[in-house]
Length: 486
Image 1 (cartoon, helix red, strand yellow):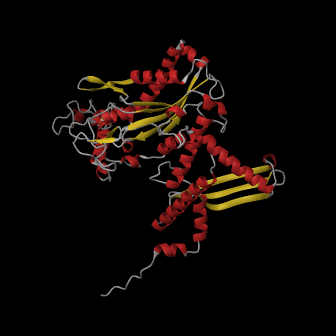
Image 2: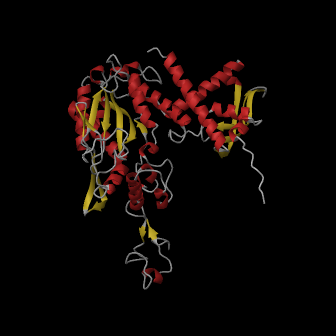
Image 3: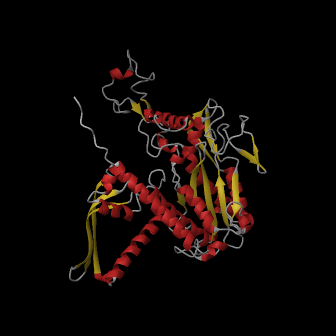
């Protein structure tokens, strides 16, 4: 039997030549090439409030962006998140926008980096006075050597403490900010209770994964008056006082786990010895200065916003939750990162019910569960939550046990992501009203949509959407470089 020859069809060409391609492409361009669009069906219209006449309407099927901040998942939505992060951070640095006065640029401001402690020696690329030094293993590593960040001796690397520190890093930051307020109050000669009546600590921080798979924080810290950005910093609030307080708070901040022990002792977590405190001013702008040596708030905002969009995919981990231990073994990552996830998965495991199985795991002969009709402890499930269940280690296994937000800020630092999204919606609404020659109090807006599905329907559509996203990014970059004058 001879099978008929399969025609060599270019499926990409066939999709481009399909009747609905122009309509599909317009929808994808409207969301800047999102790779996982949310498909909606419904109606949007603006009608005259008095007569009910429909002035403008859109109906049928539309696409909405997925909103994922990870560049490895969706570059288009990641770019939008990075742009919002940039404006949020820049407003708190320079002022003059988003309701923040320009006077914030004259306040004490620091760029602080807090790191994790060592859990065992790792391969690295050390330099001193510009000269490359050998690694602990005796080799000189290239900057892109995949060994960088991997343990020199995996057998002695403390994966348990690594995972538990990661899970407590958010709490460590929270205690750090409290300690920082205490240190500032002490230096100013006031009590902590009185601090709120004299000053306010404002900050924005972003988390970054190091190559060894552990988190560290970059933060912009600002000292305001009691009413926040609009209030003048007290006379005693200087950059030097703030910097000294940061170093003192870094030294005293610690978290102790009282419900979990290692070798019979409670587990204690602190920051790593390395802390970088840089006043935001031209004299100390080593990494964020312009060519002429002056400080650039834009460059700091860009530097920090970059890490807000870096997903765990950049660290060799996963972009989506882990559902089983076997899934960890199938990930395309390093053995070091797999071991971090294995440790997180195992530490977050449930334990056998002590009432059903008083002697440990289920016994084939003479097990305690045989004489129990119903166990009130586990509901006959045989297992109960483990001692670390509250850390949700299995849920955050794909994040290498990091449970915090990648970008967070204090309430008074600047605007919010929600406010930025609302500002865009208001701007689009006002543009529609301007086109119609109407005011907001004379119209009624009907906006009703239902989700039908998520994602593109084929690999060809995803590839075409990725090309649209890349072209949009290149055009935006060119426009920024061409139009910018400052």
